Image (cartoon, rainbow, N blue to C red; front, side):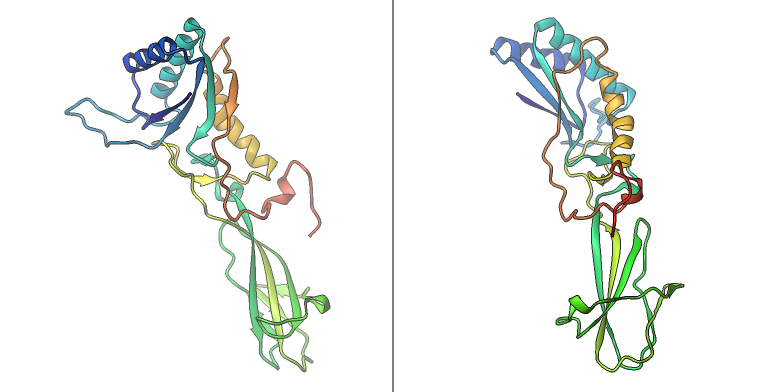
Amino acid sequence: MRWWWFGPSVNEPEIDREVELMKQAGIGGFEVQTVYPLALDDPDRGFKNYSFLSDRFIEALHFTSVKAHELGLRMDITLGSGWPYGGPAIPITQAAGKLRVERITVRLGTVRVPLPYITLGERLLAVFLVKGDAKNFEAEEALEVSDVRNGTAWLPADLQTPHVLLVFIASRTGQAVKRSAVGAEGLVLDHYDGVAIRNYLASVGERLLQTFGSNPPRAVFGDSLEVYDSDWMASWKNSAIGEATI
């Protein structure tokens, strides 16, 4: 059974009650997935959302593990909160990547072209000069522009026909984790980057798994891979597969 912990705002008496109900109903086990809060903190009612991976949350998870083991129920855990994987531990340099391609029309007689702004987490890959315009160009005759400095591409001075500058930039999708719990908000990680994966496993996975002690979960679950528009490993030089060829 999928067991969503909203907030997370769980407490031990309610966990105990629900686990007992699952046992009585003949359910063999459950998977804990921590997601978004349903209500704001209310001191007058004693209601509070505990931050994901906080000590209070970890205590509740440990209590659940012990209870499940006592009743002979299987327990799975989602590796994170919401989907896809990500959160506050993911810096922009390890966020989901995409290839950004900019097309710049080059007027006749132009010898220098300012390049698009490169923001945090991005990296210029290559600049090519091709014949044609922004909609129709001859990519098979592309000329790589090697003279790029101070945010400017310097072109040959003898261009006799219209050209387009193709600028390739390793960029980021900017996608944030969906349906995340309190304290789990942040960027989706670059699933192709070994460094990003190891960082996430260390900061989130190890924290979750330490709660189980001698009763490890039956499975670690990945909730919905929806990494939209991610088509590039922006940090390829730091990846587990080594350097790539552009």
